[in-house]
View 1: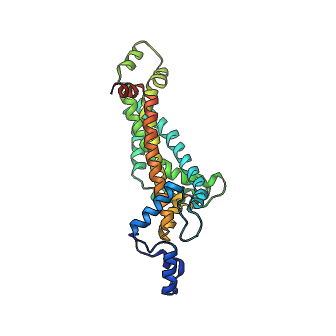
View 2: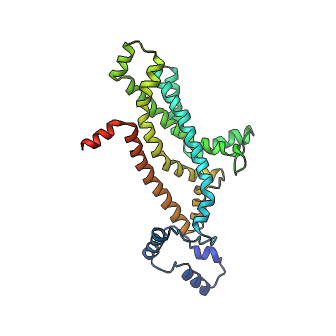
Length: 284
């Protein structure tokens, strides 16, 4: 309600009469105070699970979200897999080859990727692979090839974060006494790294995996807009431009709910994979 514009004027056009304007405004419930509108909207969600109807398309908001959520899950899920499939091995390599060319390359690449906004990275990938090389589509949906550039745009900055986090965790674990003892016993280095060190180094990474889910949905807003990907992020941008209040409120509500669930899930998973957390909780 703070942004300029009037959804009623948007729907009726500039040539509508004042009578038509007031009538539609009353029908949509926009003539009531903002706090009353919000209470009514929240009550419908809690009691009926009803997000209301789109002011622009005059269809249930839940239907609009249902049509788009599959595409957003495809995008964020693929980006999530890319981030961890690339970030974890890079972090391990950087830790094992500390202060070598491998380590410096991973650190430099991570710093470069972390400094790039989603929109800039997306435009660069479109220019290279879509315009110059012409090997990948740059917008819309179709086959699996349409998913590559948006997923890379969303996932590569997270690769950098995970690689740095994994490197720091591995270096910390490799300095522990039990790792030194394993080395003194003559155990193979690969066994020490992948059986003993990796498991403990992955604990913060698993927590981070869940905490990043809301951030991926936030990044999807920009990414879907750039690549014309028909997900919830693009629906949010279009709804804001059209002043479609019920749709915007529903999408923000879902993202907020997802954030709370992801944080709660991160705490549960952390307790499951790290017995020290359970012991501390029982002692308290």
